[in-house]
Image 1 (cartoon, rainbow, N blue to C red):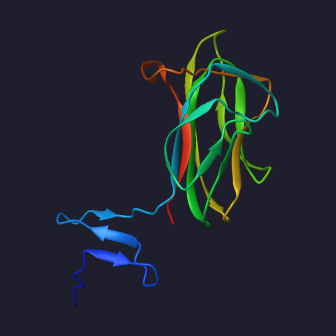
Image 2: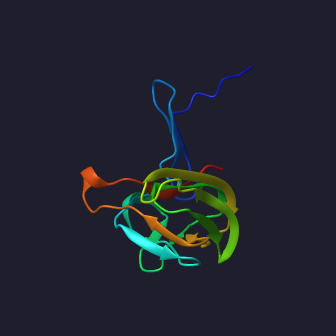
Length: 163
């Protein structure tokens, strides 16, 4: 068995670093698209309403428009998509890609009125370049907590390319 000993793998046409390996063997992929969003507002969403009210914590390549609640991916690939938050109503949230419902990513069953519950969901989905991803209130009225301060932030959403 032979060993390939390289610290960096680059694109041959423009020398962009695709993968690097440090001295301890950790692999870094500096061009991998991702986005991390934090809940920014305390809001109610009627059924079939797109969730917005997030602020971008960090991103590379994936864009977010808070007016439309849409995340747009730059390249095709397999993405991990997630959503988590504090909800005080019995309601669900759909994951939509290009306006088509893919799955119910969260459902919160309220057992006591005005009792805040932590809810989270994730999904792995093959996306095409420029696909638009959003979360949509599935039923009833969804009440989701949010805060503009770092100490009050609870919940968020995002996605990243995994393959």
